Length: 359
Image (cartoon, rainbow, N blue to C red; front, side, top):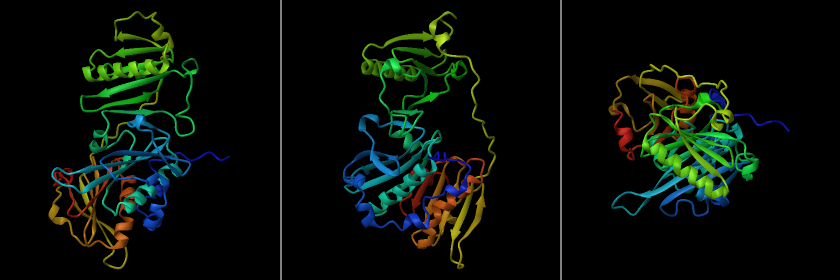
């Protein structure tokens, strides 16, 4: 069987979301999707994982946990203070090792869910390790683990467990937990780590970590012990245990691949997407100095802050402009030095504070 292709961040041909094909999804089709039963009917968070082209419910006990080989759809339903109408934010999250098929299905089904909810949701694209502040705010602790639908959630006994290293970083508002390369070179003094060896758990406390990281990691140790019954744990302060300690023999000192940091000096920019002249044109409006006065209700605008990309859809934008705006946004990002930015679709008249603040 042919191995599924992993998602290539630089491959602009994967802009499946927002395409003509996607936007032809009918509401009748959305209503026939079993996974959408009850979606958006009450305030709260709902999460689905894509498994072999299917939308499957993610267990509520696992909310905040994501596998890097998968793609997910996240719907947040809420009410504004003093109002009774339900409002929505719908995100699709792309794991770094997610396949093209999984990512494409998540994007397609996000549009379908938006259609089911009468186009009321604000749509967002989220990429692993580059999530928006809004997305992170849903989860007091976000855990990103290696694996996927076929491998990442198999139940194993502690004695069969493959050792792993978990990295805890963040602050009181949000702690992120990631499985990192199993090496001493992954350790950082300003964070906390758990070496998980199944029946033996080591809490490695960096010399300059914060109390929130230590607290969350300690909680995580307690959870793992309760799940495994006979597991034991030990806390180790950086630099305060002998070189002969078992921790040092369990964790090898091997080289790891470092993610390269891009020195991005790109200017903030605004682009117009318009078919007023008879064909779709994507043109630069302005750079550096962004002004809300440049937005025109008749078209779609893509606003790049170099930290977040917004797709602003004017009330008078044509059907084709609406259908293709996310494709153009994706293709544009793939040609920049910051292709993994969060993407948010903003409808005219429904702008939120984060969008207004960029002008």
